[in-house]
Length: 278
Ligand code: NAP
Image 1 (cartoon, rainbow, N blue to C red):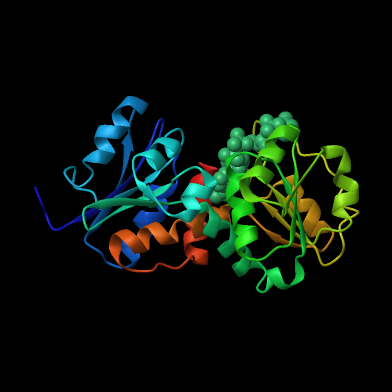
Image 2 (cartoon, rainbow, N blue to C red):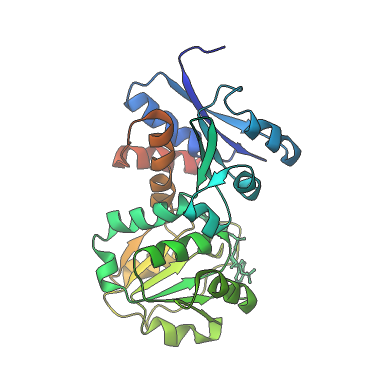
């Protein structure tokens, strides 16, 4: 049933909340490609058959969202990033093989590059709040970019310790009570918890101890300007927001599937912002 149209999709359960169709649809139109990007809502038990016959279903690759990222890792050939993070969110077919990566890693670092060029030159100590799935991507990205010490602050200390076991001695697990002291020596603060997200408890921390050259990044993007980012801007600190990371993480998949490297533009950002406000 080949129609000459290259198609990719996002699989998830549920999948209607995904912003990926808006992002990829915009780039397909912008580049005038004969291509499609669809949503595929799959129950967990449907994922193996679907991924094992992705080509037969007319797809050159897919994004993967909750709760299928671990299954996608097991059903594909992951690169170092996906393996280290323990989850795959971008899959593509190459010579009949199903390969995968985790683009949250480059989404996080590319967003920082865009927001604060040269950031890694001023960051020796980073404080990362949270130790869940997105923290693994952030920690891996920080290690890739040479950050010497990554203080992982988590409510459940054992999960922060698990990150040290996974990524090595650059990771320094800590409790929330240590935060004021850690902030005083951190040039980068990253929130990877769901605190501050619409419908979740607020993230209550005092940014006063952060040095004036510090950068504050928040992975939460609903609301677009979280109280954490608002407080950082009020203090005159550089910031990088969660929507920027979401947009930048989409670049690699589009490039792999459709052969064109797209740009994260203000126009795309405005489109997704409008989508998030609906
Ligand atoms: P996750 O694996 O469920 O981890 C959640 C983290 O938040 C854990 O460290 C958890 O601590 C902490 N947490 C939750 N509630 C807490 C509370 N009441 N007090 C203290 N800590 C609390 O989630 P995730 O996948 O990492 O996602 C986290 C956030 O990042 C979400 O808001 C998600 O939307 C966002 N995100 C954004 C992007 C992007 O592209 N911008 C990408 C990925 C994720 P415990 O370990 O103690 O439970």
